[in-house]
Image (cartoon, rainbow over all chains, first blue to last red; front, side, top):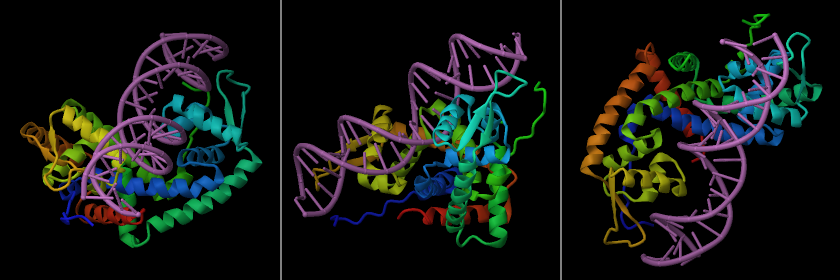
Length: 150
Length: 150
DNA sequence: TATTGTTATACTCTATAACTATA
DNA sequence: TATAGTTATAGAGTATAACAATA
């Protein structure tokens, strides 16, 4: 035990939504990645797989735009999903620069199970936030996101 | 222009608050760090300086706990603030293992200006979120944070 | 000239293990 | 034995610049 029980506060920072957002997101990030680890996925690869399944045949540049990540950073994400056998990549007939990304059967099965786990995680994190508050949170997050770079 | 205007969506992911939180926080993170760059600060060093100014004489372990970061990761943050001349570090009389962190006069002046800029940034990001919605956002973020590891 | 995908690189944040010196 | 601070290390996310192939 310490000699003097000092109460150290971050009260001054609590007035900033950005600071509280960071703390809340860190909690989510840690939890969701723990949930996804058994599936061999991270939040980013899970998200990418989800978008690919939703938009089969999309190009890498489209995936990056949908996830708001740089194209160069999409490369390793796609590589991870390819190595896991969750997606396939093929040159489309039209443009020989681009690739068409499609989910594999295994990828769809993986996504289904992972999505269920993530849904449970999400519900757990939102416990106690109900009704109008939940809607307000959603609205606020989208508005904040829209304040960012286009 | 692309031959085919494909609409790629992340609609499936939008049902997860965690995904929207990540996107919103990325927008905040990018903006606040751009705002802090002229002051030679990042979100983390700004936060640390703020907590030190609010709790002068606190120990490093207390700072780390207040910010919810690992003690080992607090080292470089403190180092950055020391090098910037924003804080001082001294061995207290009682315990020769620990350090007492205090803001310098220059650090307090820096914090004052930086806080003003961050407040403007925060207000900008929260534009359009008013009244009950703003309270709901705050409540939700604290509740989500409390769902994380203790 | 512009776009797609890629490589290389750098910085930041987070987490863990192991160590020292002090308690 | 436990605590405060440190070092080393690794993994992950983000950002920029430069390049080859193709349009």
